[in-house]
Amino acid sequence: MEPGETLLAAAHRELLEETGIKADLKKLSGVYNLALPDGTYLIACYTGRWKSGKAMASDDVMALRWALPSELEDLTFTPNVRDAIERAKLLLKL
Image (cartoon, rainbow, N blue to C red; front, side, top):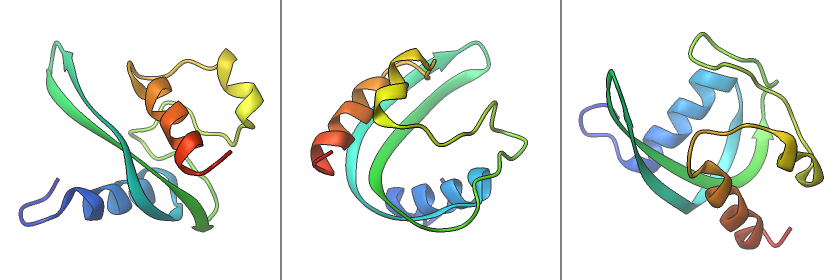
């Protein structure tokens, strides 16, 4: 987050910066702490629907692709993000 930025505004900005995508983010689906050797990170997961932009990975993204809900089981995620995805599916009524 940048000084004075709300969590939701940071989520919108990070999504655009890291993926080139704009989305209608509204609902928080999870907040998690991730402790790594280089520091502790707060991961806030929001759910929403794609609005615009072509998905392209930036330098901070290991991989980026569109996936159907049925394909998610075989993918690797940051710890706890799988739980946030399950909550997001419920929030979006998928």
